[in-house]
Length: 577
Image (cartoon, rainbow, N blue to C red; front, top):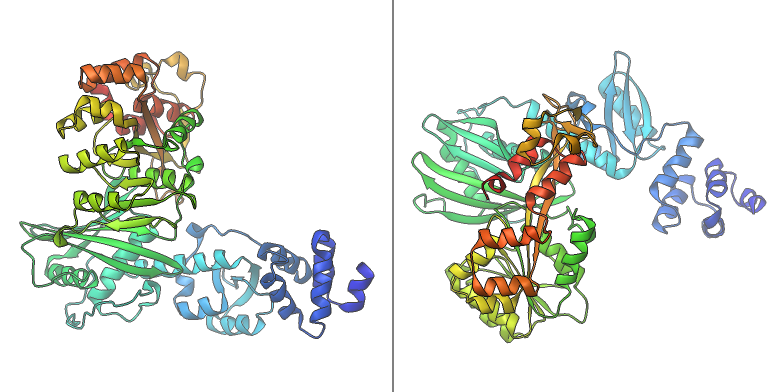
C-alpha cells in the first residue's frame, strides 16, 4: 500500500497520514486517485469534509511535516489582549489567526492553516516583530479570539467612562440576532450595555443585576450563585441605560411605573444567547435583572448530571413509571429545571407524547411540545393544563405548581393515567407534602398520586487549580455533623485565599449538586394519610436511611469537591430542622 501512495502522491503529509492511520489507508488512497491534480491544501480539506480524518489528526500531521508545534488548548488567562489592539475581529475570524504571546523580538501566532504565509507576513508588518506559529484547532482559536477581544474591550473601559458629549438618541431596537463581538462602533450608552452583557457572558454569570441607588447605579453579576459588584454607572446615565435595555427587550420605554418582562436574543461569537429581562420600579428608578440562558451550552444527560449512583438508579426508576407525580423542589436557581429537563429527555422516545407548560420556556427540548404561559392573554398554568389534557399526552411537565388550581389539575392528571413532572419552591422533600396540603390537596390524593420528591441544591465547587489541603478543628467539623475521626480518613480542602486566574480569584469554579430523595412507599403513604407534619415525616425518613441534603453536602466535602464553609452555606436550614 505504501508504494501505491508513493506512486499517487509525493506529499510527505499524505505519507505520514497513511503511516499513522492504517485503518483509513484505503480511503486516503481512493481520495488521492479521485483528486490526483489537487493541491495538498485542498486534499487536506477534502479529508476533513469526507470525515476520513478529524481535525486534530490532520493538525498533528501538519505539525510533524512543517515542524510547527501543535497545541489542542490554550490557557486564555495567560494571554495579553493588548496584542489584538491593532487588529479587527473580522480579520482574525476570517483567517483563523490570533497573536497569543510576545516578547521584545517576536510574537507567537495561533493558526489553523499551515499554508497561511501571506496572512502571517501581513501580521508581521502590523506588529513589527518576527512571528512564530503554533497550530491549534478551529474551536480553540475561535474561543481565543472571543476571549481576547472581550477582554480588550473591558480593559479599555474604566468605571463610569460614558462620555456625556456623545448622543444617545440614536438607540435602535434589534429585529434580528446581533453579534456583540462585532459591535465596535456603537454610541457610548449602547457600548456600555453591550460591554456589561458581554462581560456577564464571559464570566459565566447566571444573572446581571442593574440596581439604581440615590447616587449611583450598581451592576452586579450572580456567579456560581453569589452576587458580586463589577461596575458602577454614573447616575446621569441611568435613564439612557434603562431605555437601551428596554428597547432591546421590546418593552414599553414610556412606562416605568409597573414591572415589565421581555426577552433579548443575541449571538456572541458562535454562541446563541437568550436574555430574560425583568424590570421592577423601585424608589430610585427601575431595577433591571437579565437572566442569561446560553442555548448552545447543551443539556446534560441524566446519567452525567452529578447524582450519586444509588440515588440516580432510584430516581430513574421513578421517572420511568406510567403514571403519578414526580416533584423536584428547591429555591430559585437550584437546578430544578435542568434536572427535570434531563429526566424528561431520558424517557423521550418516538412512541411517547410529551407536552410541557412553562413560564418561560428556558430549555428547548427536541421532540417535545412546549407551551409558554402568557398570563396577559389568559393562558395561565391551569388554563394550559386543561387544554393539554384534551391532547392526551403520556407525560406532562408543569414548570411550577404555584397555586391550588394548578396543584389540583396536576393531581387529577396523574390519577387518570398521566406521568406528571413538576417543581415546588420548598426547602426539602418533607415540607413539600405540607405545601401540597396548603394548596388544598387531600392526604389520600397525595398518597395516591405522588411517586417521589427530589430536593436539589447547588453548591460551589472548589477550584481544582488552587484548592488547598487543610485540617479543620472539631468545632468546625461538628457544625457539619462530622467527627474528627471520620474526617481524618479523608483529604479535605479549603478555598485558596485570593484564588487564582482560573477561578477569577474566588477560590471556586462551577457548581455541583447535592440531593435528597423521598420515595413514597407503603410506610410513607401510611404516615402521610395520618399526618402532614413535615418535620415528623422527615424524622421518619431519616430513621429509615434517607440521605438528607446535609448528608449529601458532607459527602461532597469529604470527597474534596467543596469546602466546609460552602457545604454549611448550602445547607443552612438543615441545622434548624
